Length: 85
Image (tube, rainbow, N blue to C red; front, side, top):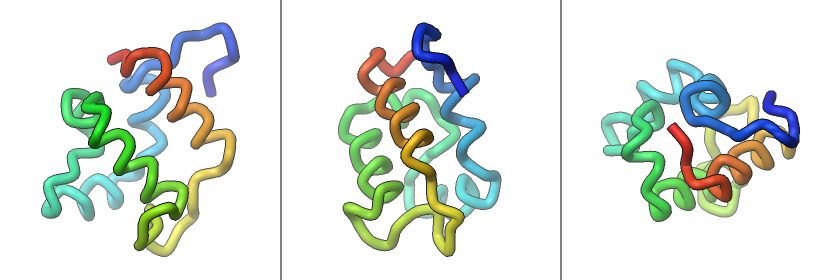
């Protein structure tokens, strides 16, 4: 995990949070969890976040394990930090 002073990057911090099975499961729906350009769209990032938190159903990842509050906070830091690659 990134410490509070470190800038959060997609490749280093966010992408490793998605399992290969999650990436493969979502691709047929047009959700490209492993693609920075796709994920850096504010609309796409918010939608993915909503599924990760359970604000939208079904909660991701399907059948868990669900992301911890710390992992969601890291995702939020990435978003708030400008979607760094």
